[in-house]
Amino acid sequence: MTDTIEQPTATAHSPQARVDAWLADFEEALAREDIDGAVALFAVDSFWRDLVAFTWNLKTVEGRDAIAELLTARLKDTNPSGFRTREEPTADGEVTTAFIEFETAVGRGNGLLRLKGDQCWTLLTTLQEITGHEEPLGSTRVLGAVHGSDSDTRSWAQKRQDEEASLGYTEQPYTLVVGGGQGGIALGARLRQLGVPAIVVDKHERPGDQWRHRYKSLCLHDPVWYDHLPYMPFPQNWPVFAPKDKIGDWLEFYTRVMEVPYWSKTTCLSASFDEAEKTWTVEVDRDGERVTLRPTHLVLATGMSGKPSIPTVPGQDVFRGEQHHSSAHPGPDQYVGKRAVVIGSNNSAHDICKALVETGVDTTMIQRSSTHIVKSDSLMDLGLGDLYSERAVAAGMTTEKADLTFASLPYRIMHEFQIPIYDAIRERDKDYYQRLEDAGFKLDFGDDDSGLFMKYLRRGSGYYIDVGACELVANGSIKLAHGQVDHLTEDSVVLSDGTELPADVVVYATGYGSMNGWAADLIGQDVADKVGKVWGLGSDTLKDPGPWEGEQRNMWKPTQQENLWFHGGNLHQSRHYSLYLALQLKARHEGLATPVYGLQEVHHLS
Image 1 (cartoon, rainbow, N blue to C red):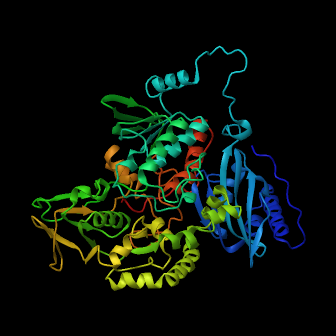
Image 2 (image 1 turned 90 degrees about the vertical axis):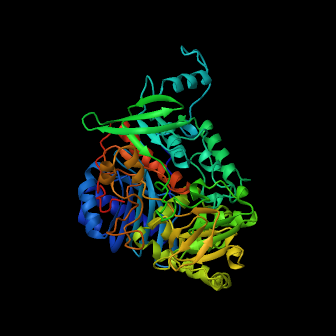
Image 3 (image 1 turned 60 degrees about the vertical axis):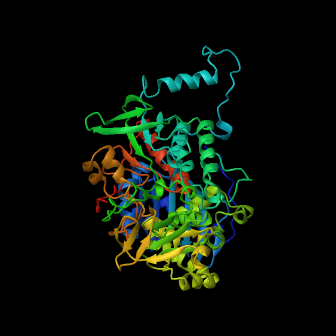
């Protein structure tokens, strides 16, 4: 538990006094179980986002009626108390913002409160640790050395070897994490620190191979301040945009240093759930050895995407050249002197086209629909700079505060905050965008002009963060074609308007399906359908069908299939949400009651 922070002295009508008064009134109403009184402290148009603390779920409720329903269902069990600020609140116009902390019946939480006047506009509450099961951090870290006599004479290395020999064989993991990229590794580290027996399995030979095996030009498109892993931030000399092999090496190092139980060269063959025993039976091939695992919980940590989507096109069987999905692209070197056609116009397509052209390959990009483009430096400055940048660090912003601030914006109104940012970007870079349009590139800024983040959250596709490829599009080095692919011939790609593009290699940069496709392959289509579509908000925009969900579908929270979870996203999400998933698993491991409020309904199968 953290020490109590001394509260700032408040003057009348100051932001501190306004927040203190609201928190005191809120806590008093909750203590009296006066739900009407508590709800009256919220504005009519208000939002409460809870990450596990009250709901054992990731749940956003909107408006007074929904807030009343949440409190009616969960107040007594949650028994919240001790609401206080963590630092001095700030004011911007009529909005007062405060980082807060509190306790519940099971643990310690923190969050962020925004007041409009004297009423709550947005409230974020998050569970940070479970009382009696805190992580051994800081002043509570383990001693390591044995001072005095100890009946266990094994060294640290011997204990690790014995654990590795027993876990999965004589001792079963409580949780099996399928997928050993950044998501699985981050969750594995969290579970390790919380004392939850877990194994992370991955088909690759080494941790980080998911990155090493991608095309050689791949770098992170997000800046370093946004991408830290739990417990171990990147060093201060780390590149702003790390190359793929450097990320691969960091993940391998991180896995070893954080002592994540990690089975490489392991493929999951099948999984089934015993409804009576409430356990999974998972058959795996571990480097040629058939092993049966019986975890209680199964986590599919395969990123944010499902299996590669490769369109079925007439003529694929007669095409004499090479064709592959972007996820299997080996890089440009073997295609020198050949003609490449890349189908798609988002991140991977641009990266691949850039590398091909710079290696001297005749390259055509087929743009099938408009794409959102944002320059990397503009995104860093205007989109991320206040939270994730050297400027933000110098101003006192920490990764924890940045994550809480970002998480505190309800998805329902997040686009309202994003639209002005992308309006400014569009004005700042208008000459740049004009050059792209003059070259024939079709641009968009999302269904409502809210830009990159909303496209990512809604559909996970349809954008490119420009780290150099757009100049090659604008100057014609990357050739452009438009429309749908009609068929392939022996040596060309033919579009629906009859345009014929000579090709020796075809790259399908055509995205991925829903993550429940992995569940279909591993467990069965019935379970995939029971869970439904993974990812998206239900915004009723392109590729994100309604109804409104309010949270990412099926991510980091309970699903309609008992004891099955999905985890992943980008490095930021893997870091932030791995905590809340790990706490949900820890609570169940310790036998705590975890009544889920607002279990997500299924509206779409894929």
